[in-house]
Image 1: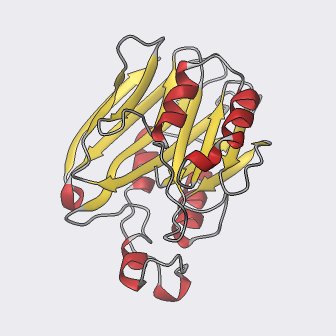
Image 2: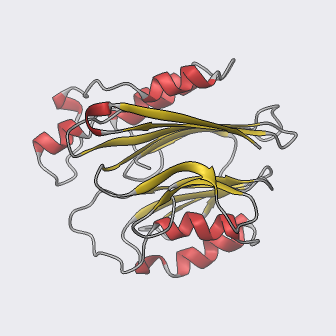
Length: 248
C-alpha cells in the first residue's frame, strides 16, 4: 500500500474503518482479494512475485497493512516486506509481541510502515524508528513516510475519511480513493525522486502507463466482529478491472 487512511475507535459500533490504495508497477504479478487456501481464514490479495501481501484480515479479527518508505538512499533489505503482513495474519502472537519481534529485525527489510491489530488493539511500527506504538483512538494517515506526515494527498484523504465517518458507505470511501488530482507543485515534498515523479505520486489515485494504483481497498469492522472488505482493481491508466466484496 502507498496510502492508508483509517479511523481507530475502540468501543465504537464500528471500531475500525480503513480506506487504502496499493500503488505498484502494473507488470508485477498479483492476485486480487480472496480467501487464501490452506490458511486459517486469511482474506487478502497476494503478490505473486514474493508471496506476501499488502493488506489483509482473518476470520478471527486480525488485521494488518503495510506501506513502503520512499527514500532512494535507503539500504535495500534482502527480505520481502509483504511477508510482514502475511506472517502476522497467519500467526497467533499479540500485535505488541509481533511488532516487538519485527522491530528487532527491521534492518532485514527496505523501509516500511506496518499496522497490525485485533478488535481490541492497533499497533504501528516505522522501520526507521524501530519503536512500536500502541495507537490511541483517532483518525490517522499513512503514506510513504512516518505516520501522519502531512503530505497533501494524505491530508486530503484523511479529511475526506473524517467527513464520511457519520455514515461510512463503501462507495463513498472508494470515491475518496479515486481522486486523481495532483497536488499543487508548491506543496510537494522533496523525497529525492525528482519533480516529475513527485507530481505523479502526489495524487491520492495514481495513474500512468506502467505504475499506478493497482487496488483500492475499503475495510469496515463492527464491534461484534463482523467485517466487510471490498477491493477494486485497476490496470494501466486507471482502467477498472473488477471488484471483490467479502463479508466475514
